[in-house]
Length: 279
Image (cartoon, rainbow, N blue to C red; front, side, top):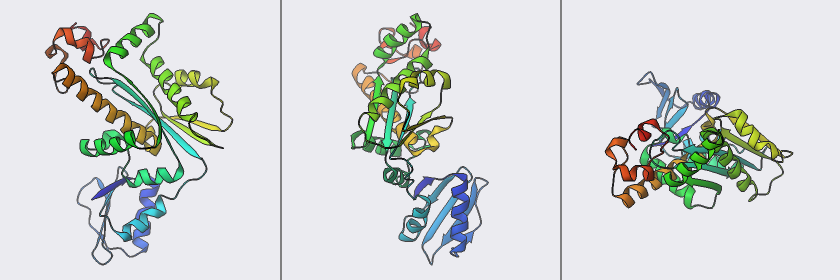
């Protein structure tokens, strides 16, 4: 079984299309299901969920139908998305990623099941994340290990700034880096919004003549942001693995008080209250 995330409008349109093709619709099996099709003649098996997620059995018939919903939007030469991972975890790094996708790549990413990293199982996340990290997609990332993060955060704090100031700077730096690596007549930038004013301030010197910049909540609904989300989470998990191996400790699923004090600042974000109280 594979899955793909559709907008609510696309979800309704898929139902209409399958019904018009006389694909056999069967009863739903839970309140979370919007509809269910199971047709042995065409080989189509599809479950549409109220969340917009669609699970389906691979096959030529359903592939042809889905292609109608994943038509390439050629309004932009590239759509860039940014997101971060590790902001809310007391342990591990802060990772920010920017991914730039062409229209055709957006379609391919959706078919691969790219969506909000929080909605992916660990196995799927690591698989897609590895492909993004090692592939040739245009991307820019910054991994701030706990040692670097704590040093930078302290510098920002001394200037009266906070984590959102730091993230606004890193997001902007990565956007500029990715833009420097592509050629475009028109591009779109989508940022998973965390602090509109501070991010807008950092972006003010960006040449926006051929750019459309959007900050939005639930930004992962945009494929490029979802890809950045997956890449950031993948790199976060890999860095946590490295820290655990290097220091021969476990940080996942434990509390800061369980970490040897002399190691805590090397694996944790020290401004978190549950960390600072144990230093």
